[in-house]
Image (cartoon, rainbow, N blue to C red; front, side):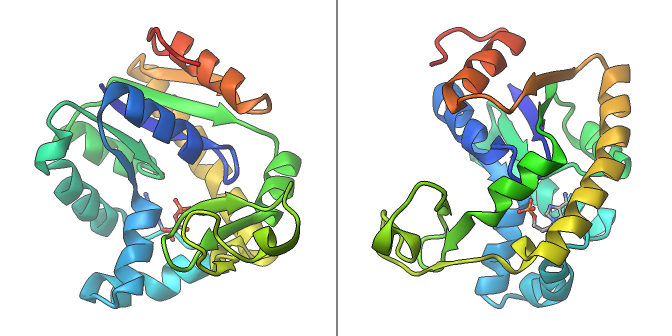
Length: 213
Ligand code: AMP
């Protein structure tokens, strides 16, 4: 199964991608995570992309296509992959289709108001990189990762001005992605404003899988 998953920031696509990855035994690949790791490691690519990523601006298609192509050529992608955060433009979708045609493009839909609400409570662990919502937490859970105890921080691109920019960009690009994948008959959409398990169930149905939660 070669799957592209997309949705606005905060739509839960990362969470659903992880469930699908475990069920299908294929890797969940987030280009945002790859880039953040490169930045943290201060690698050549990291230094090249740092300011764009921190502002919430998209990288040039050619550069992100090279990064994605390199990742999906790894042996663990032999039986498929779940791409999260890539492609984001029709140019990237066309490029991906040439390298490795996908089976489904799944959109998880939530409104902008819901996206804002969710992103405002989102943190990441500075030690293990986990994405965590502090919405229902109390006390030290607000500042410490419950997996490794690392410090929880707000991503630079989750600051309000960057969120507005990213949602604007998302809608601009999502329209193009949707029409691109509709033409290929591979577009499916589920409503992301439900319990996580209900969203999972709808995704399994849409992809013709059995065994979802
Ligand atoms: P994400 O965590 O997916 O929101 O990605 C964080 C940032 O990485 C984005 O705001 C972009 O700066 C960059 N990025 C990630 N994926 C892509 C992509 N497919 N195309 C261009 N830029 C990307």
